[in-house]
Image (tube, rainbow, N blue to C red):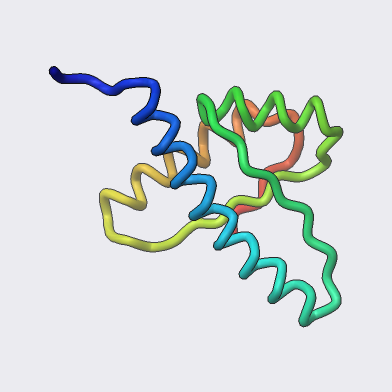
Length: 96
């Protein structure tokens, strides 16, 4: 029996949300140490549509994306995603 079940998908989403929450908790701790207010969100869906819709729904004024250097292929993929987001986001996009 191949394929993903709804239960498998829900477990995968839960594990990704837990991972994201751990990363964001760390980011919030660093921001707090420096007196910076940090607003974050975790969302799932088609990358460009999800970011665009979230910006519009929440009146976001800037999207900040993190990028890491993990080799030539990863750089290509990240650059492609960043380009697609920058071309479709209704607000400025900053890559760090």
